[in-house]
Image 1 (tube, rainbow, N blue to C red):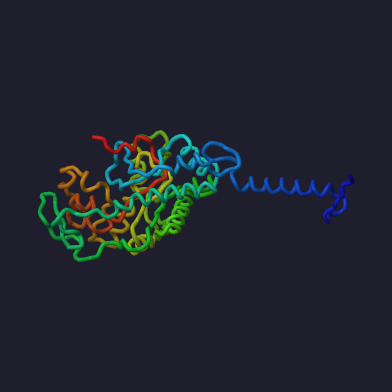
Image 2 (image 1 turned 90 degrees about the vertical axis):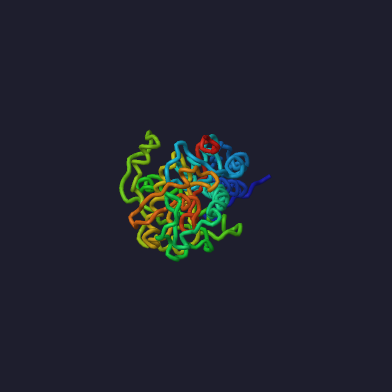
Length: 341
């Protein structure tokens, strides 16, 4: 049977072939183009022709997110929830997105992060013990258990009725240039979209930035990482008012290991908001009220404003203290073992 040839309107001298061959060629061209845009294999296990296979998606988001704590736990670390342990397919997926530019993985990673954010919402507003005044009352409990003046002076705490404010931990400019993108911010945007899609108002406020260079964290232990990052982050100009006028603050990142970066981010947010509300409680919720030890409940720290903060402020006193928590996609497996003595 004769096969009809077609030039397809090609200029003189271009190769021609059967129409069926042209169609097949176009399909091959389209597949090549798709491979430039979409991963040619699963980000977690390498299965071909899928962004993330069902098994790897289940490893990432199949289990309920849980609260995680590094050991040792840095003082001032907010309550953190993670979607999955950082191992095997989850580790491979995060590295494919962060280091190899598999940007389409941002959506499933954002879905996992959104789940961790939802899991942490219950820790954003913890009830104070019966009869204990809040910073809103203008009084705080000191280290000796006595009520002292100098709390909120009647000022209202930060709003908890606005949208969730997802604040991604920043990457250095050098890292962003090398990777071609900011992984935490990209995942945060995907998480905010997933939260909105499922009925939870949320927006991303990328207000944290590095104020100074830090050493490479690789090879540093927990104490060294804390020292390396101390004072390294700040809230950009105007960011504090956005945080103070918005809703509940959730610090977000793709991965938490020692908690040093998250602790420094929380410090920077507290410091910035304290400039807007100098008399308000600015401690993140670092412990559930029922889990705090007696020493944690009663010790107090005198700060520059000559006011005294009881540890109840850390555990849920009204103010920014109970409107900050944190969420990550993954954390080391041993950090999921929270029932340690």
